[in-house]
Image (cartoon, rainbow, N blue to C red):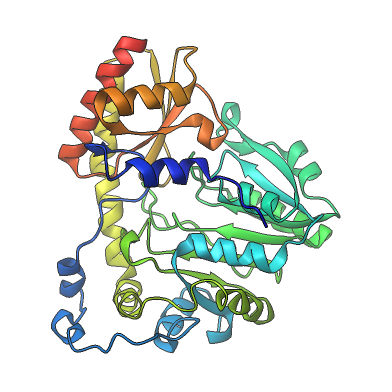
Length: 369
């Protein structure tokens, strides 16, 4: 398997710790160890923890905690991974074979664009339509999810639009997957980061062919400990564990312990995230108004990111490069999300970083626009 370059992740891993200001992320400013200690993590006791291998598919305690949020899920329905990205990776390795067809919504996080192609699968794409509030193009959807489609991947809430599917949308998608015997992989990592405070319903339980992935990186605000999970039918989860034995073997032992505290305090962490989003999105709104209509803000339903359209023929990757080089500030060009004339902006950064980043981006945009 020759895996192709993941453009956005390579850009971020190359520059996010080099530039002065990184506004390319998609979670909220990270929770600290001190904050987790205040929620019950025994920081002093951790000093005496033997740094041995942890349980390969996640400790029983963590899987029990996770299972409570997925009605009907037992320990055998849950596998803990090193981040949501590994969860998606393992599922792809488990389900996709050369010659399969894989459906995917666009725009999206492009991991599940590169992986199936590297495994020899044919990609069937359907768009979310900006002129209809990012509703799926249902004609394209019906063609993309057909009798030959092995797997459908979607993110809900969606990255990068922040749109949340309606209950009718979800039912229509599940019904089509059942008709075509297609596995539905629902990446729900932004669940809990809704600006209106109403949690996004999970696809879990809507069909026997549903697999859910999630993790601590986004709505929980804890990307650095690299904990994600898969929830699915036990037989499939067992196969995913077989793939896990060939990748990272097991989660980090301290990360598993920290994750137990985080999942046990999920609602408090979600409330923290939503408060940050509601406080900081107005900073972006106010900034947009200074451009006299040259920029358009597409506000998300969920997530610490927004899409900003600009009125210029300059390709988005060139704009992002100019901002990085001239302003030492990182954004995601729309082209890396299969969009154009727009960029994705992170507004979950520390407020002083966000304000300064907006100032710098504005300086470069005024030179361009």
